[in-house]
Image (cartoon, rainbow, N blue to C red; front, side, top):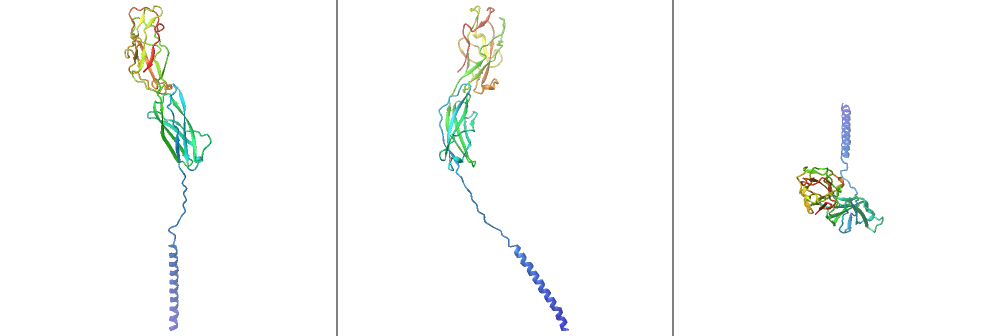
Length: 303
């Protein structure tokens, strides 16, 4: 009896040992999984290059505009880069001039002479200065980039554009249809007279002035159409503008001739239009042609 009990107990003990052994192995594997890495190191290397600068923008003498056309003006500046002149991006050299109320003039295709000296490079830029670019001080703004995209700007220089007052007009002569002695308020049949501002000075009212001359009969010079029979206005109407005075400059009230690109040819940009009206004729004058041939041409000017 005793032997059979032992045979039963031993297997149970062995099974218990096996169970604990398996449980131990399982626990040991779980501890291994939770031991993963939570931090580390990395090497960093940053190279910082030199930024460019503009050391010199050449001074420029006062400039006259050219009447009714463009004038080419040359600007020069010198750029520096601590990494060497070859690090400058010559295709990014820009010169700009600006003045409040005026259109900026820009050249983004400045050139070099192909040579450099150490860390310096010279740039030459040509700009178009138009006849209607305003008189006064203009700022010079030079810009350069290096090959890394770093930007340098210099806008310390100012140059002066001189004023120019100038005009042209067309047509060069005015005509009227045949009129009867009793006709009134007859406009010229080939006006308006178009004035072009060919300079850079705004001409305000009433500084467009007309000096009218009496018209003498071409057959009977003693018959005259007086200058005082005419009015001139900026609108297409009679009885609106000032009465002309023989041999005296008379301002056209309301007429404005600002500077601008008159090639737009819209009647207002750099232009003014004037209309001439024969208000009446002198009673009793003879039927013939009357002209400025004897007394002289009328003069249109500005002040």
